Amino acid sequence: MASNKILVIDDTTVVRVKVREMLPPGNFEVIEAKDGLEGLNFILQEKFSLIMLDFLLPKMSGWEVFQQIQAQPELRKIPLVMMSGRKEEVTEKIPEPFEYFEFLGKPFDQKQLIGAIKSAMAKAKQVRPEPVLVGAGVAVNNGPVSTSNYGNGTVTTSGTVNSAVQSSVVESASSTEIEILNEKIVKMQAEIDGLKKQLAQVVTFIKQKIK
Image (cartoon, rainbow, N blue to C red):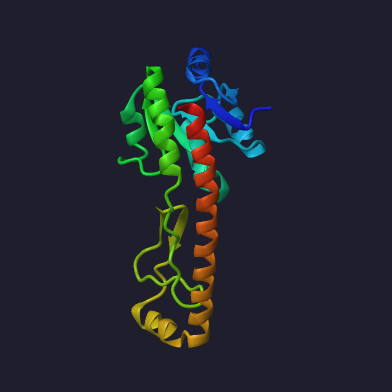
């Protein structure tokens, strides 16, 4: 049984077959999905070493699938190659530089495919910043209500807290609360370091297979 599963989500049979044939001989299992909804179901059910995602798909677009992946920490760790015949379609939604996934333009040859896979694996190892909380879990902001993507999550800020209340909240944070927060940060960093080591081992193994 193959130890490395690769998911290719593309509505064109030719592209799916092309990826399968261009992969170097090795311990690979290629799973094919013909639309975004089918692809997302595979992602939620299986564990993949790599996802190749077409940006324009029926039933659920590649952009929507990408958003679902980004919303879940475990899925964000999977190396991702985004494919499209028109790069501007991707940059309209996701501005360059593409920090956590690799882009592969269509049509592509074997060298470009292997290069994109290696780049996606390297980018997947990067640690993404966490949203920062102020005090004992109280978000402080005196601007209008807004929602923005920050690192690996969505941060929502409220404009109902004025500057006077902000000062009161920050000043009331006790040293004990700060210590607890610091302990949590240290623990989270240790967990992140552990995950980085595990991912590095997987990436090294896959790189050896595709050389």
